Length: 265
Ligand SMILES: O=C(O)CCC(=O)C(=O)O
Ligand SMILES: [Fe+2]
Image 1 (tube, rainbow, N blue to C red):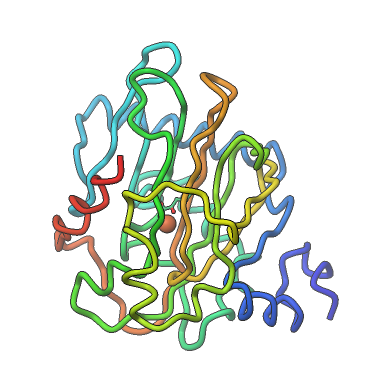
Image 2 (cartoon, rainbow, N blue to C red):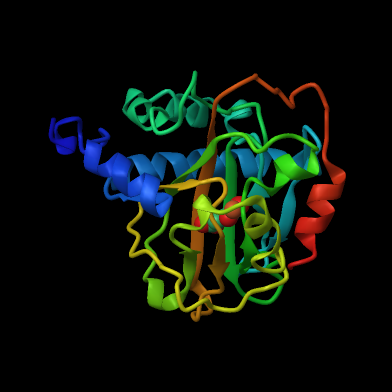
């Protein structure tokens, strides 16, 4: 079947082959502008509530605060957001996500209460911002920190702002998900290395696009070359996971991993 037959969201054999070879996929126009606005409004409501309640962490994951272009206090990294806003929870129930679950074997699901749940990253390049970029890393490193076998995991990104790759944004190293553990641990210095790699790829993103990347692929976020409003980049990530359900809603936490991650900022 043509992938576009299922609202452009199905997985064709060619998509699967691409994903297995490169470790990522980019789908354009998954959500329309109106749906993106609804999501941004929900995020703003959650932000106002967490700021008012002085929420510092959720299920052990730190919430990152900073300041916007106008000096307003904002949240630059949310975790488990869909557990705290019905519109975000509803968004994740969209049946069009289901074909993507088949990219990993087993009883795959969206990890709404596992790892960091639905993360919202809000980058803006301005004095007072505490989130403008992210150094090289793989998302599966956390499994190693937890002393677990690396489990199949895909990070599904829901992009909420346009991004011209010439200005910055997500960079991936294609194929690096097919590496041995040594490559996953030591190819680059986790989070502190921000240097471009000749093999990296960027993405011409429009708000409403989605991306998927394998948890073992090396990636980073390049700081925008623009300043202020034009540099704003908001993107949500939800892990696709299979295997034993490992809820973090019971207060289990991973302080070491998060301290490590902060090194790069
Ligand atoms: O913001 C992005 O596109 C990537 C963020 C990321 O790699 C992460 O949160 O682990
Ligand atoms: Fe990541």
